[in-house]
Structure formats: C-alpha cells, structure tokens
Image (cartoon, rainbow, N blue to C red; front, side, top):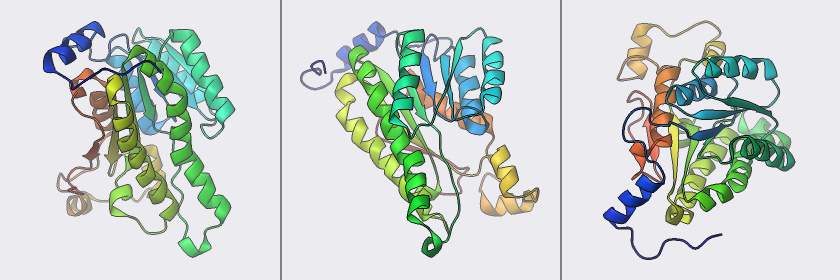
Length: 278
C-alpha cells in the first residue's frame, strides 16, 4: 500500500486534493465515475444503477444468474449515453469476485464506487434454523461485501479516492421477528462500514451505510401477497404516511457515492420516512 498522508487533514489541502481528483461541483455529480453495484439486476439495485447513470457514471452490473434482466438494464443505461458491463457471479465465491472485479478493471481501468447491495432476507424461527441456513445468510449479506471490499479497495487506495456504500435494512437497528440471521449479518455489515471508514480515511475513501425502511419494490409486493397496506395503515406505521420509492432510495445512495458527501464517513443514513428515529 502507498504511504498515507501525513499529519492532520487541513482544509486547503483537502480542497486541493479534491480538485486534483476531479470533484464534481457543477452538473452531474457522478460524471465519469465508475461504479460497481452488486445485486443490481432488479428492485433497488437496478434503480441505483439507473440513477448513477443519469448522474454521469459508468456502471458495472453484478447479478448472480439472471442475465436477461441485466441486459435490459444495460440497454437503458446505454440510452443515457453511459457505459455498462454485466458481470455474472456469486458474491460469496472468492474466485467469482476476483474475476468480476478484474473484468471491471480491464474494461474501465478503475473502480471509484462500490455499492454492496446484494442480499437475501429469509424468515425462519430461530429454534428451527439450521446451521446451513444461518451460514448462507451470513455468506451473502456479510461475507460477500467483505470479499468485494477486499478486492476493490487496493485500486481505490492506489488512486487515493473511493466511495463505498453498504446497504442494510432498518431491522439491523430495530430487530425483527424470525430474522436473527439477517439482522446479525446486516448489523455486522454496518460494523464493517465503521471499521473500514477508519482504516481507509487516510486514502480519501469514504465508507457509509444506508438503512432503508419500507421501500415500494417488487419484493415487498410479493411479501404482502397483493394485500398492500391502506393509506391509513401507512400513516400509522410511517410519519411521512407512505413507503419510499425506489427512486428516492437510489438518490440517497447517489448522494453518498458523490463528492457532496465528502465529509461524511463511517455513518449510517436512515431512509425510512421517520418510522425509526435513530
């Protein structure tokens, strides 16, 4: 690893460094950045990819298996005059992660932004949970982000610039019945956020977490089996009176991926309409 900066961070030095790295102060916030997004084939992941492209980024789209959804997303990103590459692979497989990241580096030469979005959220009573079920959730939700960070961070260190955004749900902070494995993994992911924020601050790498509450996604429609809560029920659950949209979710992540958040690291942004005040 190259030597970190010496001494305390001074305002003038920080501004000069940001200018050298092309900090976006006008226009599209992510112009000419390269973003690697896991679990980007649908729902919030695809919304993040589109938002990043709209804000000027080229995008590496990771999906585990569904190439058709990813190819459709590539077409939509290309229509925005940005480049997109699909990398198919399981984030729990170290060799697959190495291959996917190398493909991105060969295509674009660098990775500026990593969004760890891939996740599974099964429900199971704790006393019925098999060790294989526990390990699978930990592998996807925590070990996957570890592997992606471990592979991508060296290139961020070399360029002394990077943004990592880890995605969790609000249950990591408030708990939820029958999801002990999911909550433990996602709470651990925010722990990784805090650790990496300190480990890599000297290299101008920001690491943050977004914790989403109720977001109107296809997954949630399946969860409610078509029985979408009434307006009165949403008002009871959420002070803002409605679930968030995928576009709102994506814009929150884009903020943390941009230089508008250059003085934020090691933090969690709760995007839940006031349902959890943390």
